[in-house]
Length: 169
Image (cartoon, rainbow, N blue to C red; front, side, top):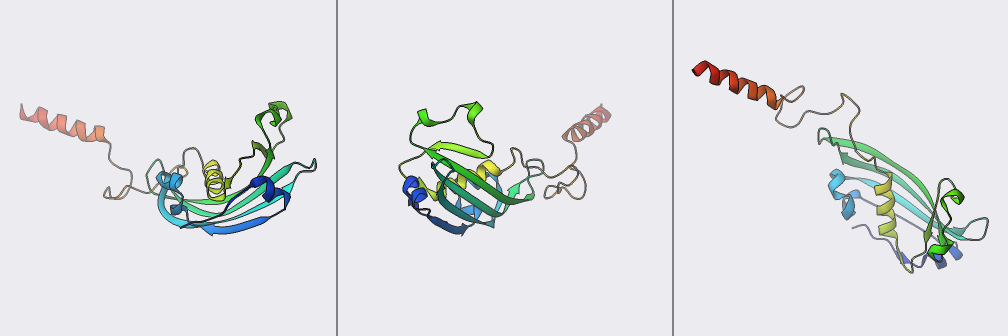
C-alpha cells in the first residue's frame, strides 16, 4: 500500500523539508478505472521552499510508468510519467493572482491546513494523463477472441443475416 505523510504545507515549505517515496499505480483509488493493469511504478519527491518573493512553495517531481487502457481497443497502453510541478501557497482566495498575473508553469493554490501527500501525488498523476488514452493510429491490438486483423463489422453480420433470410423466401 502506498503511504505518505500528511503535513502542514506552510511549515513544510518554511523549513525547506523534503519527502520522497515510491508506489504502484494500483494503490491509487481514483486511477483504477484508467488502468489496464495495476502494474507499473512511480517515484515522487516533494520539497518545500520559497519563491523569490518569499512566498511558500512546494515542488513535486514524479517519475515512473503506468499501463493505461487504450480507449480504442481496451488493450494495454504503456505511459511514461515525467512530471515537475511548482505550487505556490497563499493564505486565502483574495491572495490568488488574476489570470493576467499568472506565471507560466506555476500553480497558485490556497494552502490547506493539512496536505495529504498521497492525494497530491494522485492528483498530479491524473492531471498528467492524456484526456483520451489511445494507441497511435494502426497500433491497436485486436480484441481477445477476434483473431488477427480488424474486428468484423456488426453491420456485415447483419447484412449476412438479411441475405440468408431473403434466400428462404
